[in-house]
Amino acid sequence: MVETLTGHNRSNGISYNEILEGDTVPPPAVYLEDSPMEPGLTTVEVSRYWSKEEHDREVEKLWKRVWQMACHKDDIPNVGDTHVYDIAGLSFLIVHAAEGEYKAYPNACLHRGRSLCDAHKKGLKAIRCPFHGWSWELDGKLKEVPCQWDFPTVSEETHSLTEVKIGQWGGLIFINPDPDCEPLEDFLGDIDRHFRIPFERRYKAAHLVKRLPCNWKVAQEAFMESYHVVGTHPVLMPTFSDANSKYDVWHNMSRAMSASGPPSPHTSLTNPDPTAFPDGKLFKSFHHPINNHVYRRLEENRVEVEFPNGKKGVFDMEANYIEGDVKNADTHMCNWVGGKIAPEEEEMDAPFPPGTPREYRDAIANARREDMRETWGDEVEGFSDADLCDSIFYSVFPNISPWADHNAIFYRFRPDGDNPEQSLHEVMYLLPLPEGAERPEPAECTFLDLHDDYTEAPNFGSYLLKIFNQDYLNHRAVQKGVHSHPHGETMFASYQESKIRHFHETLNLWLDSDEAPKSPKLQAAE
Image (cartoon, rainbow, N blue to C red; front, side, top):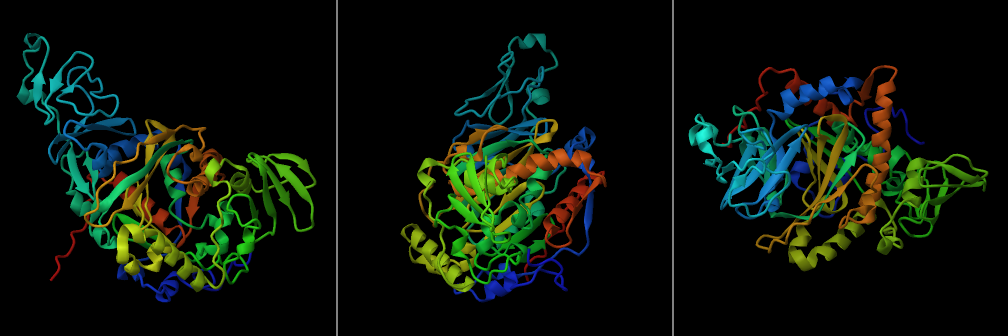
């Protein structure tokens, strides 16, 4: 590995802002803003990741009083459509109550507490409890109680459904169970200035939910930094400036920006290296840029590993030794090369325009512009190189991650019921549309259980899903390891893990406050 201690406060090589300043089509001004977190290391007690007591504290102090995304308007497009939103043992019912009007209620019958809806519904005329038939209008007013003579204290005034605070941003529906909460607009602050294409003009092109064997914070933290690329995603290093990423934080939001083009400063590479994929294919072979080991796919679940001295060994996709002189292999690389691939993508080419990092960025950005021209027309000429090349991903407290304008990825992380050691990783492709374009039907959601492979989800493509499979190997191992951590606390880096530091600082504020924290008011423009 090339860089360790550099003598200054970042990795060697060109900085992210310097890369953007050389771009052919410049970025939005907001991308060049710097808002780093105050330096310092952050430690977190490991019990936060597995303790039922900590989980219960989060339910009371966080989930019962914070703004949180519940669903997309496209999930309930018609009056009478409902969406069940579950979070940490709590359940809420989101209802399209009238044209353009949405309501949210606790998902519990006011008679005996049965869930009003067990699953999402379409076209309801009323909300009816399946147990005894109590029913409510879509706007929550009590409609009917069978044998109401037997309930003399029940009336529309006393037993209409209790409304939960609701708000909207970018086509997403948020709820807050706290009746005294601040407006959603105050909580989100000036988020809109970070996106030139409003989220209202995005549609759901793909959707999956994957159950993970780890706490929701373990899962989310894995997607908040690029520091892990060197160990987990070596396939990115020949064209990805991982350790020179840029990190910014604001009140309830943070941002990471990682450039494509310049190779990782962990390598000795100056230019993108097409020899990293000896066969010219993304999934058939890989030449590791640090240790020079070569991984070759023999077939699914069989990988040959060759060392520089010519010694070889064969492993399965979990890096279990099968035969040969080489006895150890990188589990993340065995998963990448030997793991599942959609049949139509087995021969996918590795996109490697030759030349300098600048030439690489130009070629990738121009190729994307041409791919998008049929939909966007000449508007593509104004799409910045950064938007078309880079990983620019935001985190909005407590648990969503919208990506920048022309990267459709959107994450949400949730506890899986009352089990603090399981979580749900939700991924959507929210594709932007030109103004006035017809909105396609939203994609159906695919649910993947603990032992399902990410590549079983349709519409995402093997590349992203195989990246997720590599992350999955860390999720389960971190959850196992935090129980045995000899120091009893995890540690987060001053800069590269500042998004995680900011998250825990914000979480501490909520967990330690008797009243829900309020956001600073934005200054009115003069």
